[in-house]
Length: 175
Image (tube, rainbow, N blue to C red):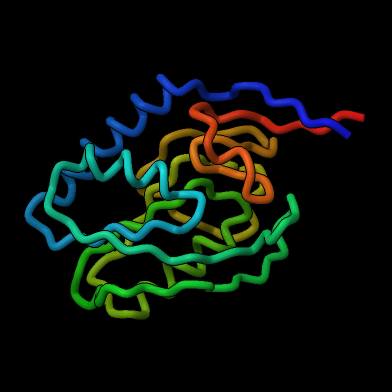
């Protein structure tokens, strides 16, 4: 079986969306004590680019959570592999996610951070795949809505591969 990649969102469109999101977040969080929390591994490229466009002093932290393992289908069982190292009590937290798919992982993480005493928790997602949603999720800042295809690139992966691609691509298997 071989895989074919087709570009869904080219790098120029991604750059414009990230700049737009960063400017809006910078405006919305001006004068606050902001902590930006990336969900690893998928959000690291998006988050690095995003925080440069926010243009505010902020703290950065990461959580690692998984519901996929080495499969293309979510197991719906969330495992936190690495938890917060920053105290978020009484701080505004922006969770940064690569893609909201079923919603299970990001919903779990948002609730987990809120339980830590954050003043507010909002979500910024590079991509949203609403056709697969199983758990309600409020996305406060969104880059793109994508079709029900398995996407890779710009941090998004399949079995820890394809993160390096500068575009967001659909991954399709062929016999």
